[in-house]
Image (cartoon, rainbow, N blue to C red):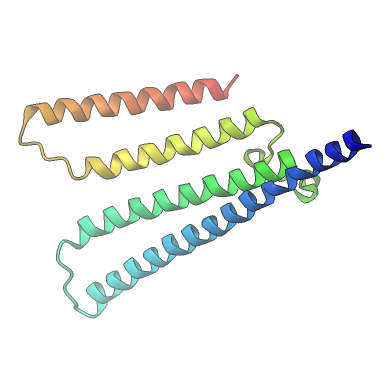
Length: 170
């Protein structure tokens, strides 16, 4: 009887994962909202500059940096969404509506911990690529070594994307 009660408790303790799922969903909503708000703010600045004659110094540089940051936030929000759905499917229950539709995306179908890990790794790699791109915008080419470092960084990012793409085909 004690063993059965303990097994019941152990099995149902998996529902604690709902805290991770809900927290991830809240984080995802916050990031999507903040990134969208940032894009609306940029659009408003563009309208002010183009049609209302308001001067924004270094607008182009600011726009590129903020757009890259927004893409970074959108990707991180996507990581949280995939994580939340994967944890729910692995520990709580399959999401019936996702498996019932013919047009459901494969990226949101998680069958194992390895599936979740692979999908998260690909999105995290994209976040790193976007972060690298954002940092490259601030590199000054006053030193030949900086050019070499940037070329090496681009080579490493390219290799990471190549190997990630190759592993996805198998």
